[in-house]
Image 1 (cartoon, rainbow, N blue to C red):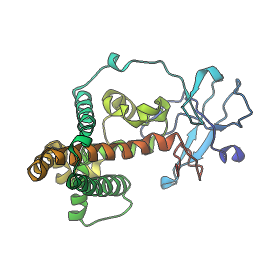
Image 2 (cartoon, rainbow, N blue to C red):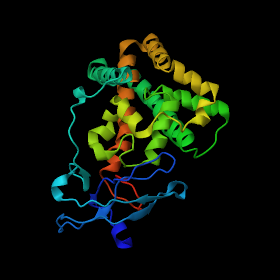
Image 3 (cartoon, rainbow, N blue to C red):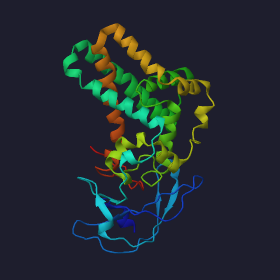
Image 4 (cartoon, rainbow, N blue to C red):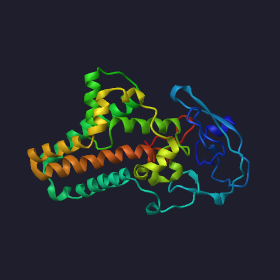
Length: 302
């Protein structure tokens, strides 16, 4: 069994019939490796125990149903096989106001960025690059991800709040919601309860999950994993007033450099940071190699 787990590709996923509970989280797939010369055939999946690197948490992974090759499909240019699911068109599901809002924001930023060639000047480009450093690297990567989600290090409160405010300017949501989603991602990584699981396909894990709050609620329930942030008035304030802060930045940019600053400082910069963040959730769980057997599908791409 140890030899199986040391060869992470191609990967075979199978849903588990076991009920998942938030208090005792577990994955809902088993990982079995095949050589390129082997053909999938009916078989019964064994029970496995896989170790996660974070906090040394071990989770029982089991599945008992027989499977055939026709039940699965391969993600394009990837060794990851995912179980076929009944296709539901996006316009047929229930939509909430938050879903429409997310679509409007993401779509408007992409449309705005298309004007970049017609609004080019080097001042606008430099502003976009500077804001990318501040909002993307310091705000999302350092603050939202490493500091707030994983508590990888501590900062003085004034600096923690400053970097978190920078992250809010990336237009990816307020710190409480962003951190809650990411913690659930690690709790249920690459399972049926992962908020942006590749089990639902590349595009769902890349961006479509943001437009389906019903699915997130069904998988994870109402956020209950961010009490450390919810008790702080600063993060409550950012959650309640979140959308006004990027709007204020846009007004300031227009005052300083006109429409080119809006196109580059908001549109191009925000879309760039969007896809950097989203590719970690999608591409880094679909393509690449695993240096360690982490028990999930996370991979290194270079």
